[in-house]
Length: 233
Image (cartoon, rainbow, N blue to C red):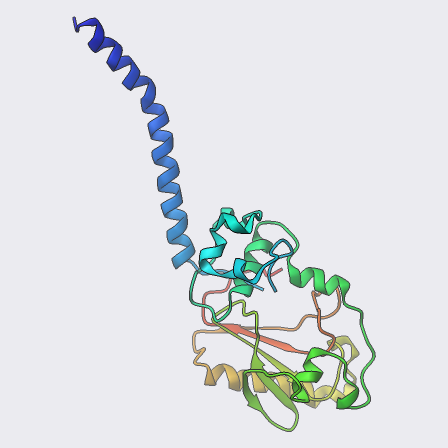
């Protein structure tokens, strides 16, 4: 038989073994999660409601206790570092975590408006972009529409195509707007080609509150550059 002290030491080590395995499992799970966050793509559509600081949309701040925020990243989700803006990443992480994101909140708060009689009377942020009152990363423009990059992209390529005519939402469009609506889609097709989205992309038009429309100026989302999932929303 082993000496008493040796047997007791063995019992101590045996009792500690399950705790050690739990600790190792936690460490491994953390490593796997970090790899998924760096390598995995996913759906993504302004920062989540609980994000109160711009610093909380950066890669380092998402893991920082200084944010003192609920961490939807516990769900494990989004690629770090391949988007032009961190806001879109945080928005979709929050959505997948089951909470209402900023876009949903804005859509619920937004008030539908009537069509403006002229560009100068268009009160929306897109009206201001068309009037050159605020800057935008424009990728295409003609006499009927304007295409520019979304400031909160949900994918490596996320571009908005808007008509210069103020149509608040798709359901407000008239039969006489058929040519213009078709032009928006053909423009989106051309922009997608220019962006090199040969493997596919998604076209989205939000309409009304339940369609998650937060800006009442008709706009077409061109989303691509990664594998998208289904169903949306």
